[in-house]
Structure formats: structure tokens, C-alpha cells
Amino acid sequence: MKSLLLLAPLSLTLPTTALFILLPLYAYPNTSASDWNNATAAIAAYPKVQWQVIVNPDSGPGTTGYPTDQNYITAIAQLNSYANVQTLGYVDTDNTHRAYSAVVSDINVYASWANYPNTQYNISMAGIFFDDVNNTKSTAVSTYMHNASAYAYATVPSDVTPVVFNPGALAPTTLFSYCDTMVEFENFSSSYQNATTIATIPSAYRGQSAILVHDTTGTTNVKSLVHTMAQDGIEAVYFTSDCCYNALNGTLLMQLAAAVQAG
Image 1 (tube, rainbow, N blue to C red):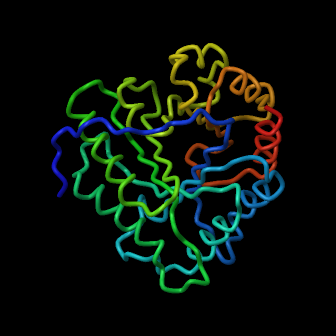
Image 2: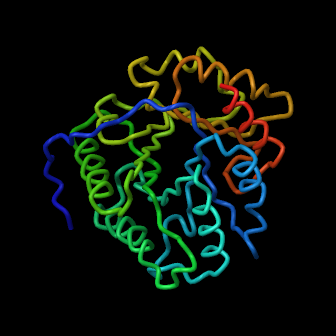
């Protein structure tokens, strides 16, 4: 188990990038990745739009090391075939109540996927998505998340290794030093207030901030909302009509991708 002593601050370069889509892809892919078709169709239709896609086979990578489900193997390899996609492995922190050794174990499993024996399938992960991040300002939380992200950066064999924290709400600004992207809003469409919500995010950190909006309706003006995000410097976005990222609305995904490309 890695020590939880506070490490020296990481010397990270955290660039401000154009708006991209952060897609929690928790739906089961099914045969020939058919249930991910709406995602890959939008990815293919908008090659200039960058996507970070969160892969979550079993509230994490599962317990088998390499995936044993051919449907997941095929589907992840398909995602990795697109130049505008980075895949992120899902790791739950349970508000930093989860044993740190379990977090490290998940990261190690995702890192090992780069060495999947059947080289016909590239199932490597580019980075890690830490979910249920505690947004309490405390030394214990800062230490836990600092060490977790440092381990991910050091372990995942990727040229970029994007690390995303998801507290789902405003986080202490100290945590931004340990990740590339912070989910500062994850809530119902009815709770999202466009510029008013964005204004709650400190301006200096909007270029590292993501907004995830669920339970959207047919009246949601995605194009207008995304335009405001782009103008205000938000880094990443996702809109979905379901509650739990277990379904993919193809029409909404196309609208979102078009809006992100337009800026």
C-alpha cells in the first residue's frame, strides 16, 4: 500500500484546451458493441470534436485482471480506434472512504490492459476517472486524492494520462493541482442555470472544469447552453436524457457534438 503521507506538489502542466465531451459510458456494449453505436456514430461524425470516454465494466475494472467479456474487449478496442477519443478507466473513491489499496489495485488493473495478449485488440486506457471525490476541504482528502492521482500519472502507460476528478459539485481549489479536469457540476437539467451556474466556478479554474447535465428534456437548448460554456471557458461537457449514464440518446449526442464543434 502506498503511504498516505502528503507528497511534494506535482509539477504538472495542465493546459487549457478547447471544449471537449466527457462521456460516462456505463451502458453494457452488447454484441458487436451494438449498444454503443450511438456513441461511436457521433464520434465518427464529428472527428474534430475531442472525446474522453469513461469505461466502467463493473463499478471499476472488475476482478479478473484483463477483461474476459468479449463484448467489452471489442467495444473498447473500437473506441480506441478513433483518433479523437481518449478512454478513461473508472475508479470509485467512495468520498475517500474506500481503502486506498483498493484504488491502487484498480489503477494497476487498468494500466495492465495496455499489455493485453491479443494484440488484435487495443484495450489500453489513456487515463483515469476518479468518481465520488470528496469535496470537503481537509488535509486528509487532499492527501488521499493527491496520492491517488500521482499513482495514476506514474502507472498508466500513456503519453498523456488525463486524470479527472468527479466531486459532482464545487471542489476546493487545492484539488485542481492534482488533476487535469474537475467535474464542478453534475446534476439534473432542471438545476442547471447556464451562466449563473458557471459563475459559481472560479474563473481561474473554468479551463479545468467539466459540467455534466442529466435528465435533460426535449426542450433543452443544448446548442445555446454549450455556446455559453465555450464562451466562458469551460473545458468539458456532457448532456444526457437519462439519469445514470446507462443509455445513449443518439439524437442528443449528435446535437451535443455539433454544438461543441460550433463552440
